[in-house]
Amino acid sequence: ILGGVLFDLDGVITDTAELHYQAWKELADELNIPFDREYNEKLKGVDRMASLKLILKNGDREFSQDELVKLADQKNERYKELLETLTPDALLPGVRKLLKALRRDGILVALASASRNAPTVLDRLGVTDLFDYVADAGAVALQKPDAEIFLNAAEGLGVHPLRCIGIEDAEAGVLAIHRAGMPAVGIGTEETLPDADHHVATPADLTPALLREWMEEFP
Ligand code: G6P
Ligand code: MG
Image (tube, rainbow, N blue to C red; front, top):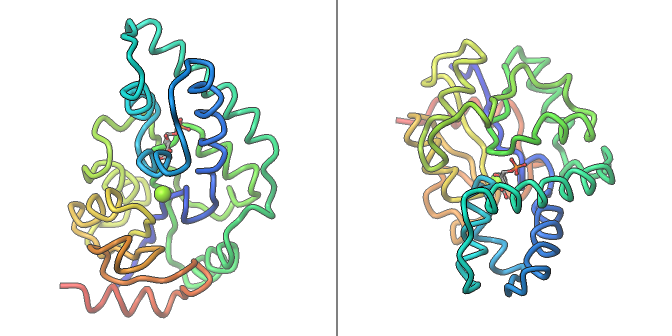
């Protein structure tokens, strides 16, 4: 029985990856480190400090812990400025409709994102009210592909993990969902997300009935 649906944020609800990219790009340019959209793909679902370290790998300077924290803060301040440009128009197709349909059916909904800015993003998109719980990325010790954030989201809903289904656009997230014991829906294709149990192009292709069906057939 489907009790809860756990959503990733970036690439599932909205495409903040481009805003993260712009903020990182400005920092990388300042440090004279090569960085492009292709490399940015590697940062999807990766937390802020780990992302910074992946970018700095392509430069030849070493940074102290203090400097790393300052650089991460600098990027985040810029990212927060960019978030101010976000409006409900930035919701991916079908998200609002799906969230409302789930609510109507009494299925609980949580956000399981690595982003500490997730609450702000939901506010900007105007969908905060449609979430029953938002997992606190700052309180999670182990990043995706560890199961922690999805287990935390299920717990926050008060729904047993084996009654939840997860939706992700990144392979690390799909693995995290599976480690939490849940079926994983991939926003993408067999090629981009080989481990997802089902694939759709956008959330517009999802309905509560389909998610229920996929929940039932999951081993
Ligand atoms: C998501 C994004 C990542 C981002 C991470 C942390 O997982 O896909 O690109 O680095 O959140 O975001 P934050 O807003 O906390 O810096
Ligand atoms: Mg994502």
